Image (cartoon, rainbow, N blue to C red; front, side):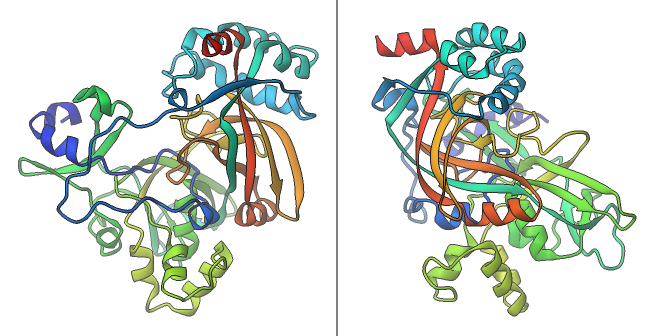
Length: 402
């Protein structure tokens, strides 16, 4: 039964239960929740959260500013070109652009312009949202030991999307909730929250034919799940790539912050490596710590290039970023100025092609670093102030200026 058909009688519950969702992502790298701005206080138990229209870029102070395309314009053009098919069809929830605004730029991009820098300078104008002051973190595509079937040494399942997982678009019930989604399951005649991580760890999904693949290490599997995609190194030497398919609808909780808050790690000392070290040193306590993050990601096998971002296309190392679609049109180029690990300054054109559960608000981005040891190290250490300009087509900039 489709979500809309099965949930029509649950409108009061839907309006009162706009739980935060984990968007399609390789998103939420370990430093992302650890170093992200503090989450807002949770609603007291039993209280009904206020239903308010979410903020978006068009509701914030905007300024059209001059920009000079940096040296990586060719790589950014190649990534932008891949965005065009989806970019021209999808609704821009940020309010900055309309689908028709992108036609001229996408036509020009398809013609393979000889001077990529001139392409960006001629087809776009830069918009500073709330002065462009922001924050950057990083994510990567992990590679861990895995298997396609349950065999000795591979005890940890990655699950497919369960058939009883219901997804409701709250915008179908109330206009001011457009863009908000609710996930759950039907229990009798009620829509209830889907099983949390503790229940999944206890085996509530086991034996239902939902196991897509298996991992050797439960902690590496947990971090691959946080990334939202990854590669499994199979016993025969082959590679199986898995990617985000859905999520259980539970809000994301950063276990690094849990460790810091209770004094198990020093303030500022939560990184992927320090969290892994704590988990390995405390195997009896580790399951409870993992269960402190109730969010669970469900996967599908990815064939061909990857990892695949929220636009359904493969993301590009050091060019693609995850952003909040309420503040950046998915597929739009960005001019990013930030600092990489090792105090390396970065000024580059990037393209917003992904989203992430902890990547919320204006000028908040997550840089896709790629795969391998260097990408893992950079993603794990990336946490820096940033200046971010959104590049929009000329006609959209003119409309915004008016």
